Amino acid sequence: MTAEIVDSPQFAAETDQLLKIFANQPEGPDLDPYQALLLDREELPDPELAGECDPRTHPEDLTITLPDRRLEARVYRPLTSGPRPVVLWLHGGGFIGGDLRDIEYATSGIAVAGNVVVVSLNYRLAPESPYPAGLHDVRDSLDWLREYTAELNGDGRIAVGGQSAGAALAAGACLLARDEGTPLPDRQILCYPSLDLDQDTESYRSFDGTFLSIAPGGWSSTQYFPDGDLPAAAVPLRAATVAGLPPALVLAAGRDPLRDDARIYANRLGQDGVPARLVEYADTMHAFLNFPAALSAGRHAVELIGADLRTTFNGPRP
Figure 1 (cartoon, rainbow, N blue to C red):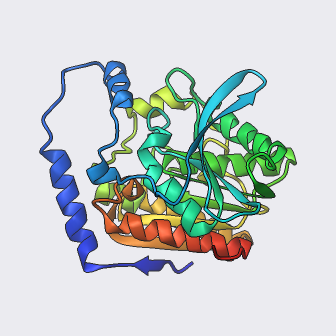
Figure 2 (figure 1 turned 90 degrees about the horizontal axis):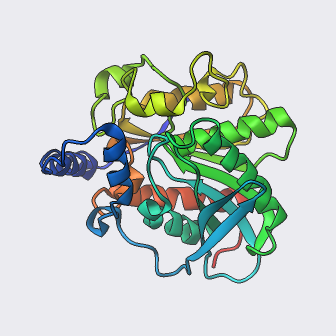
């Protein structure tokens, strides 16, 4: 599969500048990994990097009540009247961190640009809730959205998408739906997805440590993944076949150790007969959708995802 390359002279310079900002931040207190994680979870996003919620949406907090748990979510609705498709969106954070508040520029912007209702979910995190807790949250939330679509002003059509670990959960939930015989989402949107464990790819060898490290034995991976053989829903690149999955939009970052996860999965989808579109942002780092105020690639990607959803659902313009 040939990727659509999105490039701009400013992408590399913006990425270099943001990486320099991160490198120059003062070191925090010397804490064990779990205490450092708890501290990180409390940190609010910096609007000078993360941007702000699109004022053309009206965010509303939501509780998704499942038989044995309650999950926090936030709904972003476009200003158009009438039922619209619903998109379940999943933040990144290595399966141990992240929060819906970190990505409000993206989730609100996708609602506006795509003319869709976006439900941004706070799924359960490791180490408190290791695999398959987060994956089951996504699977069960998709079922919940189908049941309560009218209350959300949905029209019955559903997509699922996410970033990094969230994209892995989106892909895994699609595999579960296919294998369990439950309704599939109409589209999956996988932004720089983490789809395997202990990868030995060209992008890992070239870019590991560029904002993100996926080196074997990392603390976050050991907290989330179970010991022994991993099921395909946990590491979708190991699925025997990806036939029968929803059509996909896959986004990659050119300077990301996970770049090749996106490339390989998009190619496998296409080879197995699943319509897939691969878009790669050149000279851009992992998690660029988290930093749209600093990275124009993030702003571009929000508009691209929105346009893709419009094409998918052939919805009217506002």
